[in-house]
Image (cartoon, rainbow, N blue to C red; front, side, top):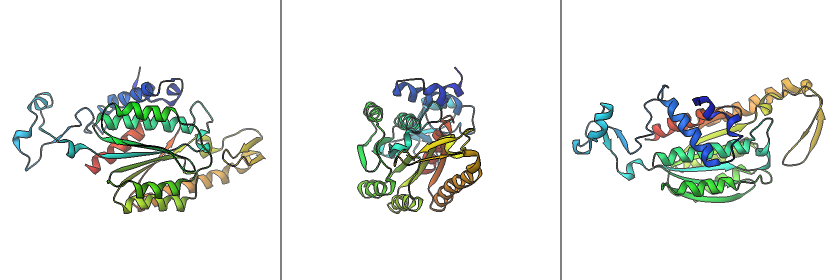
Length: 296
């Protein structure tokens, strides 16, 4: 099976086992790292870092030097352990799908894959599930058996009522005491200014922040070819229209919506990734590793 097949949402949507999905995504991704510009990222040797001036020679891993012809220093747990909190939106709008995998299922697999990769690197990862309020919380742990608890919580996700992202962000920012990495996974269908205010709260508290904006391709393009009834999944409000009449204005509005988040996040030193549900998940994993390497 090729690397792209490992990462394909179409294939992943046909599998029932979340653990298997996560393992396929991450291991397919790691295979790809060796052929990519990101070959230098530490995945297999998470407890090591490159030797630098001032490091003690006694900490060099000579066995690893024999395999790689490069000097690596063994790191102690406090050097390697990053605290990551995955904040996953399970509101009703996340249940939308125009093809095989809904936004919510995509977010589940993405979260499971990120957790698998983080724990493989001996980082600690926690989980918060929310809609109009926080529905579940699992504090960060770095033990390998923590993965089962994370998968169990993710498997139990059920779409909730309306979205209320900002109050959850503010509450979490006050509740999370240790600095770390915050990963928000959501379609961001809430008031953008309020959401940004919540994200800035994390930055004020000293956290690094990565926003993964999950959208279905149809939500961006509105490529329907016949008269269509549209229903708001959270309010139940309906409208019947001929999409081709409004497609241009709709696309302009959605572009503005996404670009607002992208530009304001950049201004506040928050990383932003647009993840369409028909795209392989390696882009998101790469963004995480870029962020992880920058944090150190």
